Image 1 (cartoon, rainbow, N blue to C red):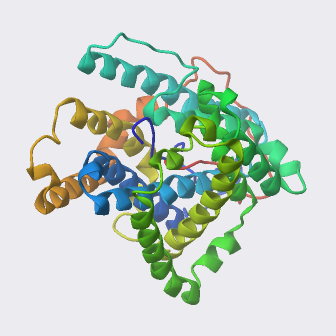
Image 2: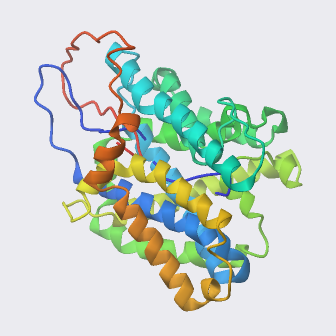
Amino acid sequence: MSQVSPAAPVTPDATPRVEGVRPQERDAFFDNAKFLAIVLVVVGHSWEALRDESRVMAAGYLLLYAFHMPAFTIISGYFSRGFAFRPRQIQRLFSGVVVPYIVFETALNLFRAWNTGEELKITLLYPWYLTWFLMALFIWRLTTPLWRQMRHPFTVSVIVSAAATASPDIGGDLSLQRVLQYLPFFVLGLRLEQRHFETLRDRRLRSLAPAVLALGALAAYWAVPRMNPDWFYHRYAAQELGVPGWVGVLMALGMLGCSLLLSAAFLSLTPSRRTWFTALGTGTLYAYLLHGFLAKGAHYWDWYEGDFANSPAGILLITAVAAAVAVALTTPPVVKAFRWVMEPRLDWFLTPASPEKTKTGNAPRGAAPGS
């Protein structure tokens, strides 16, 4: 993710809240999954500068990028199933996705210009670095009712994704390449139900998950000298990576299968009980967006210069610090300090939504990484 990246993500608070219905207890499994995924996102960014000097680090980097954002996107889709353009949902989409996008797209570009001396360029139509996921989430959420009405939405989304990989004219406006290439993961999340995640936690499947991740690591190690890592960013068409469009289609299908398998293994190993970090899973959007300043700053300030950074001790220290940063940025003090921009109250701007009455309180309404 040099122009990427995590967890991200994801909008605040995915706990269903329906007027007149008592809120249900949050599912610890999803909060655990979001927390673990955001830690991997932050750690992955810390490994970016280390991969050129070590094939092992490059393999670890590829492995993380093969599944952490796909897993986030699947969870985002799952918590978008109830989106139907109701007034309260539109307000939350605006306050929890649009406003953070505008603020952080501006702030990150200001940070880049200040540190590099480059000309300040801010365009909300061309997301830079982490903000691509918020743009993607905004577009995916708006199209949710359409995918919910289709008979075979996942098949259609795979066709759209593969076609995008072979279409260089799409370009980077609105991060459309990424929006379309990651689309199957979101649509899959829309179609999943609680029972599917429970199946992943079956004891027999859990016993296979470590072997799947180990095989993924070996495949990544093999691929390091043979494969362009830009494939894992999903921001380029095949022709931009120097291969014909039909190769891009095959790569899209192959990588989709690998990402789904690794994501399933990751989710299978995710604890379903409450743990010390379960509550921190509600603050993953904060970690996703805020860590970008440190991730980029580490490059601007030459923190990776010198032999120590690439030594075993240096790699362990950098990894530990990155994980600690991820944890710290999901804690209640950070959430409280930045809630004004992540979950702003916009009563002065938007008209109040009338109370919504539904037959059930089971329709999820958040997104990931920050749900």
